[in-house]
Each structure stands twice: as C-alpha cells, then as structure tokens.
Length: 181
Length: 169
Image (cartoon, rainbow over all chains, first blue to last red; front, side, top):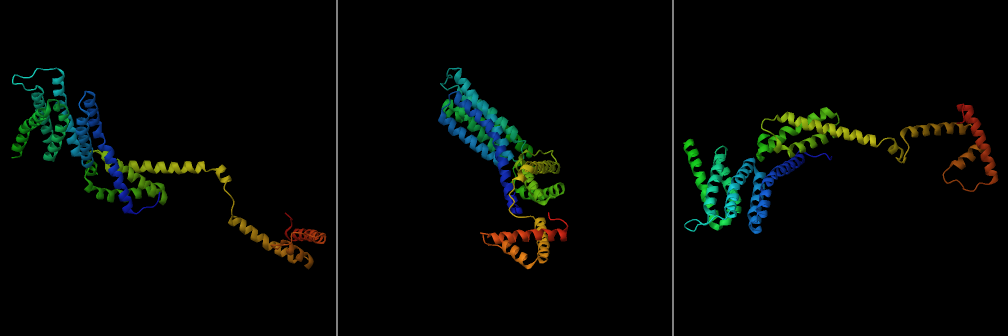
C-alpha cells in the first residue's frame, strides 16, 4: 500500500463509510422490491408499478443512505401501507356489489386501510425523537405503497386512503401533542 | 461512533481523529514493522468505516476496533509469510546474477594483489608475455612462438604462486 497523508486516508475512509452506508441502505430494497414484484404478478399496470414503485425504491434507498431514522420511517411506511395495498385488491377480487349509493366498495376499503396505516405510522412516530419528519416520511411512503393497491378504485380510492391516513393519525398526533402540553 | 453508525456525518471527523492514531499505534506495536503496520492500520480503518453502520449501541468501540485491527495484522503477517515461502529456493535459483556480491569483489581484489606480487617475481620476458595476453584487446592470433612463451610463463607463474602461497588452486 502506498503511504498516504492523513487527509488522503480520511477521504478514503469517508468513501468506505459511504459505501458501507449504501450497502446497509440497500436492505430497504429487500422490502420494497418483492412488493413491486407481487404488484406486477397480481396484474397491476406496469407503468403504475414502475412509476410509484421506482419512486418508493429510489426515495427509500436515498433516505436510508441519509440517516437511520429515515430508513425506519420508510420501513414503517411500507409495512403500514401493505394493508392499503392488499385490501382494495381483495375486495375487487371478491367481486363485491357496489354499495347502495353506487360507490365502489374498494373506496371504503381504501379508507379503512388508510386509517389502519395512519394509526400504525403515528403510534410509531411518537416513539421517535424527530417525530414530525419521521411521520412525514412514513406517511408519504404509506401513501405511495397504498396507492399501488387503492388505485384499483381510481382516484377515489387513493383519496379515500389518504383521508384514512389523516383520520388514523389524528387521534395519536393530538394525544401526543396534548401530552407534551 | 454510535452517531456515525446512525448516519450523522458530522461525527466522522471526531471518530477518524480518535481511531486513526490509535490503530496506527496498535498495529505498530503488534507488527514491529512500520510499513507493514501502516498497511494494517489503513486496512483496519477502511474495514471499520465500511462496517460502521453495523455498530451496535451496546458495543464497545475500542474492543471492536482492536478486533478488526488484530485480524488485519494477523492477515497481513500471514500473507507476507506465505509470499516468502512461495518465493523460496526455486525462485531464488532463477534470480539472474547480474553483478558480483561485495564478498566476491573483495576476494577478486585480494587475488589481484596476490597475482601482481607473484608477477613481480617472474622474469621480465615472462611478465611481459603474461601482461600482453591478459591486457584487454590482446591479439586474437597467437603465433607458435608466442604460444611457447606463454606456456613457459604460465608454468613459471604456477611454480612461483606455489612457492609464495603454498597451493596453485
């Protein structure tokens, strides 16, 4: 090995650190990529999966590279978004009849799964030191993940899911705010 | 270290400043060889930073760093030993001899002095004949007369060498 100055060693060490961090951040993809494969396998449009899935994968990897708390937020968001991804698809596969007012049953399913996701994400966020940023990252990830399934009911499904996330988060966020005084 | 493991880049400078001299010192003490110690310390430092994200909150940084450095020192030493073994006798036998060793040069110089001593004891005609043939750029063709003189000169030289040094080897 060629003798190096301390500054050169530090630069090389920094590069190694970033490489190690990238290796660690790539674990996020182990969670995201199988989900995208499943989405394609069950017949979700390739463009939707490519667009939303690519966004989740790239953002997840990039955020995990930045800091552990973002990695945890992305992980929580993806896991919390799985019910929102699955439930509307199950409802559609079971061929439920439209509701009395003609509403697609997938829309309330999206809302309900959004409530669950919002509650899970908020409960997890209050345990964190940087709650707001954790919550924001997790909610966006949940919304993206959930949209892969909720979009089966069109824009209404996605909006219903987002409304559900907000509704599910609200009680926990309000209670945490009240506890802080 | 814990902050760095979590992704706080601001902690990099402090961790580097603490670990680099420490690893160098440790490797230097273990290996007793400055260049090898530098290599081992650099290798250990790079591995340490590459795996920094794996560091656990309940871990001991010093023990962790020493573990990696000790492994690196052992690996380097083993690698050097293996290389030395691989470059053993067969390889040494193929090393081209391009120049004589200091020992050979000393022997050659002594022989030169001894030869000059013996030459001074010879007759002038024998000495001139030998010097003419040993001089660089001596004539390639040797006449019968020259060959005869040369043979006589060599015989007398051998006798003179044996008289002075006891052996003509």
